[in-house]
Length: 489
Image 1: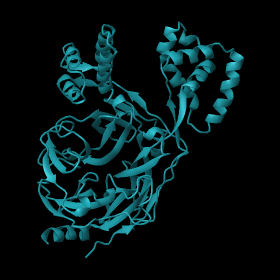
Image 2: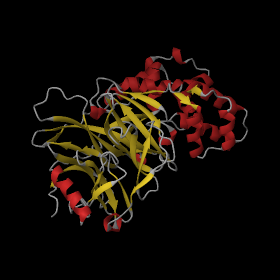
Image 3: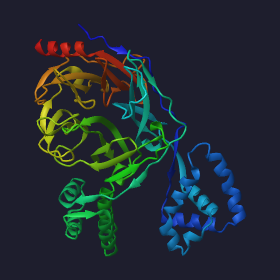
């Protein structure tokens, strides 16, 4: 007996018109030349250039003057080197200079996929049986740089899903770097990023057991001044890049969820933020928080990271540590198990592992949980988001890669109080790309980063060949019965 899978008619497509005004910088020397050219303009000419710019781009960005002013302020060190008093510049000259260091970036122009779904913290003013949802996506723009974008949706008592249209504007968050670092953990992570060991030891010896970003930056800059080798100067920069991987971002309260984009910020993310898996985590004391594991990529190295929020306005971001915090595909269980945090991972790129920890950001001793078993997952098996708790056990949606690099979705059932034990696994795919879903940016791929249960139905958002997202529905009782039956065959 095959499971009855209902494909929803909804299709969420990317919107290439949604652009963000990003800071653009092409090196100190050229930047200084541009500044000097603008400084050579009269005030009348300056106003004549910037005034129509503001009129045109105010229709495309929320408070474009604030954006341009912020981008100009990032150049303050160069103004000082040019002996220009930044504070004496007129508003219009600052705006014009800022415009030369700003470019529009379409965050969803290349691909739009790998959705995760979570309950919205705000469930007020809804009809009985309705729920408000937040769906996250991996969006890819120019240069194949990935970011996290959001949409809001409503699901009613009959499991009809309505996706709220996205807003016209995109807002960039304010970045806050005020973290206090644990020296042992920080430099343990630094070793895994292949930074020169002698440089690491030198910097480490000058820091207290707990240190702030400002202290680290001062030591780095002082050390670089004494260093003649450009190669070793870069190694000092890498330590700062790692420190920049710890930060907080804050969005304006007047933004819609679809206006907020989590864009790569630190150097170790410069090539993208990939595959966020959001989970509503419930603590033992009854409180809760929203977490997401994701992969930061700098073009060469992969760094698993953790994002935490309570309201989707304020986000705290940090790297994950330990032998189990390697590769991609980390997914946090939605609560502690036997007093410990639990995580699914795929540290070797092929198999699913499970691990436990007393601390949510330190993961050691991964234990093999699943290996490819069926022909449609011989290349690799991985998770599709956090396991879902039921009275019969943890349902884990998996992905499998088989012939012709076809990605399909599967499902497993893990023991409730000991998820190292697999109770059952489907012996055929739960969902495969059909003729309408196999074509796209990356053909023959179905992929998901999280699902929810509503009215005893499992709702799975899934990316379609990296070009759009749709939904599938499966009855929970039928799925659990099928998992147990297939394991007993």
